[in-house]
Image (tube, rainbow, N blue to C red; front, side, top):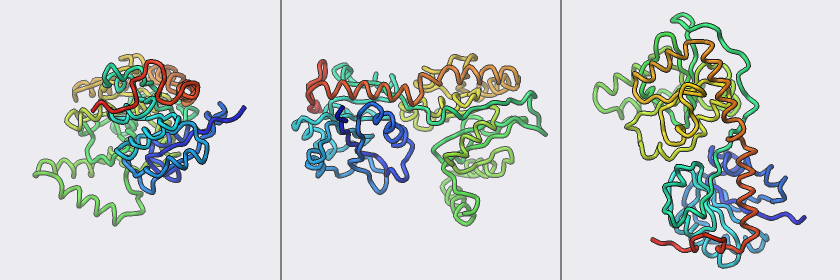
Length: 368
């Protein structure tokens, strides 16, 4: 069988991809090959950019015999024009979006992939038939906890919580300070310990940016808290940290860009759940669709709620039971394999229909 060539317009460079590029595109390549698709990187920027100049790609698409072009979170006037030009040439187009609504790109492309049902629901009814949900697939499902502590934690031997983030947090959201029986490791966008001078500069810049004495003191308390560790994200070490932890946490400050957080995928949650961790998270739409309160995880809004859930998870039997149920509840539905199956189903539908003319779809022009 002749392979169907599909070209990817990436948000970031494949040599050092950001998570969305890795999860939505690069991780799918082996599954696409197995399903007789032939992925090609059509465009990748030196530095991540959502609105690159891709105006010169149409001729190359034709020359290389690509039948589908996949825009991985790439948008803007240049991307819109390319999508319309390709549609006119009979080339199918896919727009993969993870945390915003861009009706112009949805209109310009043949189909849109949203990472959550909630994100799909935010699009107007006329666009619903051309939007499909492909979740962020769990990357390392084979890495999970196989041993659990049997104590409740104490000041001398605290339980361990892990918070994995793409930010360099300078506060512990919602909680502020962990209970005295808990230590928190934040895995995020921090500099390695060996870059001490740059880390000191970052501290000075962050401190200078704090508004007023209260915020500065809060930041200094965060830095000086011996039960909070901030370490740089590493693709291998992050899974070791999760396996070593007793509890997973995702606290979100309700004042920290609530609209943006509401559009996030469930990936931060499901990767911790798949690692066998009992997780407590601030509720956002994608998390609420996954967590069964008290059974496979916990949702907590206020500091009081958080402290109550943490106290409940001091029970070693509950920690293990919730962690095991958490893994069982997400390992198949949010696996890479399942998301690849969903993606391949969409792509097969595209190649079986003319570009821009799939049944039930809105025409490929912007309503704006």
